[in-house]
Length: 321
Image 1 (cartoon, rainbow, N blue to C red):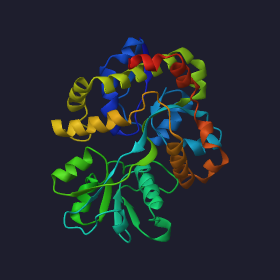
Image 2: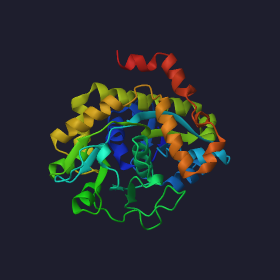
Image 3: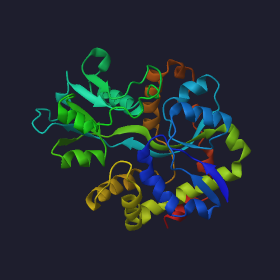
Image 4: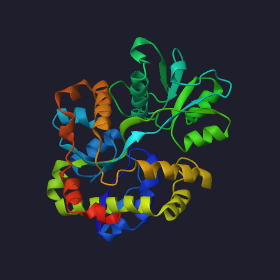
């Protein structure tokens, strides 16, 4: 049994990773995957470079600048290409849609989520740089960095919707199950358009690792693809795993699990291809975070021939027959 190190960048990824692991798909291909471990952006780059980490589940923004400076970081595939968020406001708020957000305060948390909020609002006519809106981050993240100031990662653990509830901010953007928790607490949840985005688990590694372990990479990808097929084709078994194992975002009841499962099952890419809209949007965030990212073509970070080979062989189609 080969051991693979595959830490995640955000605990929300575990809603799918637990299912893939428990489906037995990686084990079927002779791989023991260490996936239930968080890693920072800085640690990701160090681990991929040193070889201490085989794959990283995420790190969507910073690699473009790092590749411009000589890193051999590469993306092999993408699980989800869209952020299906909701607008959360207080129940007595006069805000009923995005057009009502002008001159309000939006609460966010983290680096990539904050960039997502910036881009989504800008694309909807609300530009932070024109002072149309104010985005306030619960974490202190230095300009140009993806990680919070050391010691601040666990700061202000108030849920974003509770921040809205307290009146410190006027609104926030949430995804299930957080949006469901907010709604259960009496907050007003407003449906909005999704954002095309490289989101959730991205298969990140180094060219050096792939070239040195091509057979292991193929088995790892086969296990992941087969686990996603299990997720989509075995809803009852999958929902049971999610309810029992995915508690990092709070314990979910059956109704919440149904909603989370439905959204993930629809959004998961069966063949792990990224969309051009998602790449374009995440690259805009990379440019804002690190201007040196402009030195490269965003597609140069993606090497999809490994999943294309599996696709052309009929491997994925056979999983859904």
